[in-house]
Length: 245
Image 1 (spheres, one colour):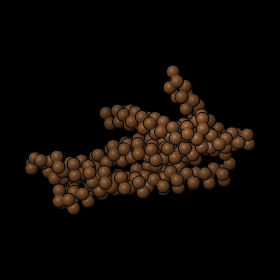
Image 2 (tube, rainbow, N blue to C red):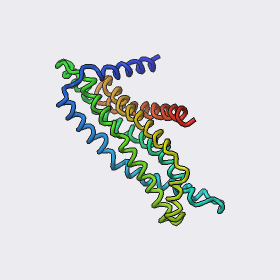
Image 3 (cartoon, rainbow, N blue to C red):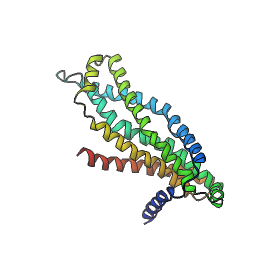
Image 4 (cartoon, helix red, strand yellow):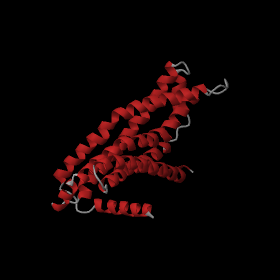
């Protein structure tokens, strides 16, 4: 029963975000700050993980191709499919639920326990719009992060295969181009935008409705990570079922 209370309050929060907008000069500054923190600040860890996981996917594919009759370009094909369809949009989003989600929950939760949100409400500010809307707009640039993850994942696989002696450069590139379906990229970006909405709103919900003191901020960050990850996995399943079957 408590779960339905949270779900209902979550959707009411979404509605209130788009009521009574904050003045644009203030909102613009908040949006730019969140873009720098949530998007630009995540590029380093995303790039690092994408490059090496792409390499691991390629190496594991190569090591499992024991049959000499299998074409070597399958390494490039498998790396491309794994990175574009699942690794970049889904796996990176779960990682971002830990990094970005925890930051959002802790920052808003700290404002709640220090009564800064109460002070904003006394001044007549729509705190839902002031605190959460800039994060939603900032995470509209999240597909840019996923695009970099896709590129570096495939590039990491290329480096691992070619310089590891598993395949030639021509074979790997031929595998990347093999049976390419452009709709798979569209499917990945549809998921990415939905994940971006979850990354912006679920951690914000747990921070905004936090009860307790400073110790509870850490607990709320952990809870938001768990529920954001669960929501990402469920949405991933539903979108895959709808778009690819």
